[in-house]
Image (tube, rainbow, N blue to C red; front, side):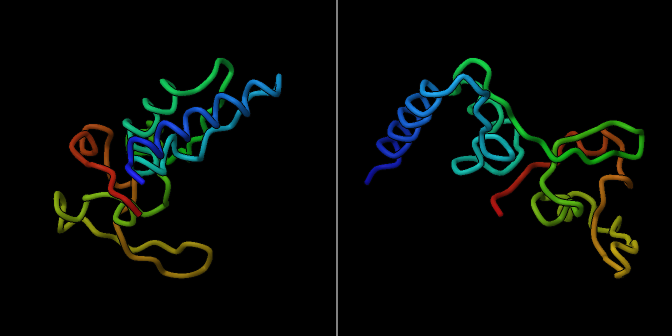
Length: 122
């Protein structure tokens, strides 16, 4: 089945299910993450364009070094972005739930630092 056919069927099903309820429809965590990388601007934009009025988008908020919130699906940036390619020497270790965890964390970067980081498919 072609991707455009699947996309069209998905949008139609969303519209049909939403029409049967007055409650807000929750779109997949991270926007339209089945078609675009999770929590990317493309995923959220497409979800808003194809949703019904009153739809709700769910975002996992991570804080940056300068106290700004960013939508990102994981505690470690390297699990769903190209951060390691852009900042290969800024990896750190932190205790996470009692376990030392190594990676790139949002708390070590300012919003300006993250401006050129791109989400990738998980």
